[in-house]
Amino acid sequence: MNREKQSLIDIQRVILFVCVIGLGSQCTQQTVDKKADGLCRIKMVDELETITEGAATLQTNTRRTTYAYTANGDLAQQLINYEQRDSKKVINTYSYDESYAYDAEGYAITQLSKSQWKTEYDSGEIIERTTYVYEAGRLSQSVRMVTAPNNSQAKITRQYNYDASGQLTQLLEQTTYPNLPDSLRKQTLYPDGYSTTWTYKDGKAADYVLKTSGIEKRPYTLQNGLITRAENDLSGSASVYTYDSQRRVIKDEYWQNGKLKYYTEYVPSAAKLTTQSLPVMKGFPIITNPNGERAAWASYKTYWRYDLNTSTFYLTSDAQTQYKLTGAGYTQLAETTDTQRNSYPVPPTPRIRKNTQTYTYDGACD
Image 1 (tube, rainbow, N blue to C red):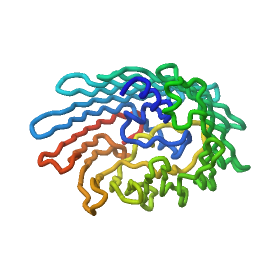
Image 2: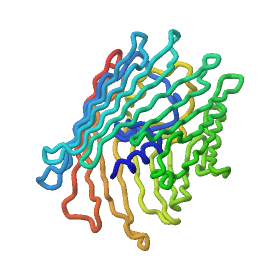
Image 3: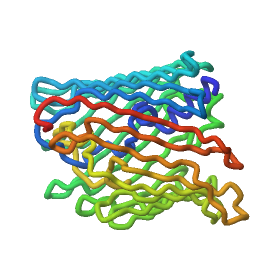
Image 4: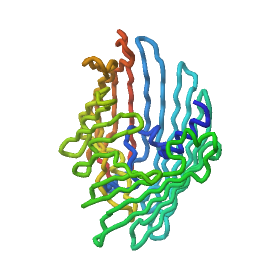
């Protein structure tokens, strides 16, 4: 992938680098969707992953995530370092450094982040700066500036509206490109910018509108505050989601031209997520996540239909995770084995992905 295309993807999606190299969590809106538990705080996560095929080791990946907190217990920094090796040769390295500054009353006023990568093909960095404004102790506006390679820039402004009781009723987001090189304009989906509007009722998403070039679209179907269907009118595809009684995704499907192409089935575990130990951002709205409650998976299986003219699905990924928990239910150790068959016809020798995550905490986690 060349540098211009990389910068386009990163700036257009405007996704924090941690989403790409994080531990499988979903990236969601800039709000608090669950309160932290007690005084337990995640300190460090070490991850080792190997991918083998028969007796051959194809890839070895390592990742370390560390967290630092202020004297008042607020999140001060999150640092991620990731390295991907193939036969002892470093192929890709990534790093993500995110930090927060607070005012005297404990409100976050700025968030700074730098994402850097170096691969066989290119290298670069993305710098983000977000400022926060509050009214009556509630987050009222945030402005994020994103600078990618080639000095490409995106500006994302969010406006938060509340009812008399302090519940979030509307989230308005406007994305513009203060600097978008001509070489990227034709490749950018909405080069003149776009806006989105989330409407909430009783802390749950009730409506979502995407507006571009004066045209409004509603790509999401919402039921009980959850996205059950997401349409992509450019590709003619759609994603369909099924949830359990605890609002966790247990199945997602990918449909193309009215036919089911692949789907994944999930089984949640009882393990608490590390995000549940992170401190709540003071003044940020608390809502339920329209993508569902996050979960640590006990297992998941993915099935593909390579030929849409047949009814045959192939099991391409079969992952099982074993957990060792603290007394408070947080993960101390997670060991995942994923049997992958990602080609057609299904190869006789599958690839085995083994992933081990070790967690270190501060505070009352036991």
